[in-house]
Length: 196
Image (tube, rainbow, N blue to C red):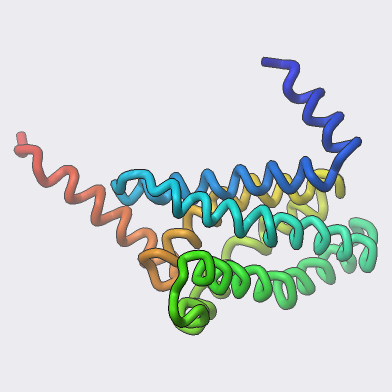
């Protein structure tokens, strides 16, 4: 079991791009599977494959290139560099990622209006992301080595994917809708038990 970390580290040094892309893709796809379970639904592996396809073909690659571009354009960990990277990430990178997710999933699902989810959920999702991603990326830019930043974003993306996949399928892009479904599921599960 202890041998996996050195092997992963070697792979990340030798082949950083595919290693990060596969880690990111696996973690975000697992987030989709988790949100299905949290809703009490049967596993929809076709949906999870769609998420994996989109994440591996676009999001993970975009993230890898984007994070390296930010580091090249704004090198270092000085406070002004961190804040500039964070601002660029949230003002440029986040809208691209959210838009690509909603449009990409709509294309893969064969929806007639591929922009409908984007129009209905973009702002709520973007604003929800502003409550999560700045903290993640601040940690990423200040503590994580460049070669691991996409993988770290994938670890944090696992939680985000649980939310955004729910939003794409059932929610409105707000954290409130995600927590409401979890709360409703939790209370309905306990209602069947007699009170003591």
